[in-house]
Image (cartoon, rainbow, N blue to C red; front, top):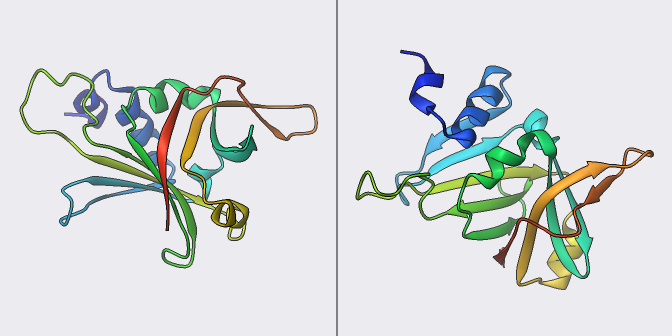
Length: 159
């Protein structure tokens, strides 16, 4: 049986499988939390951008990843510094299943997006309480432009 059949119609799982095919992601089980940890490599992290919009940190994703990112019920976010020797934006979901009526056990999920060292340092000083996530586009100069209305705002922990 193919992995794509196992993923079924779940856009996030299909996205992870596509990234796995180009060695842009690592998936681990976290025995302490029971969560599945999806850790993007450099190639996977290029699909994201960070900015400040209206004094709120914003994590943008490219339009082709929109369905995958919005298929997950993200519940919290974190900024992680020097973990291990990298900075990350982490998104968490208490239950990543699309259809929660089929089984009793939730599937916790965490997505770790590496960010260039120092890129988030201003955010650490600012100590924001929430993170906006949503689609982004590129302008003529190749700079990330975040959507005026984010997909979701998540409670944010800075550590």
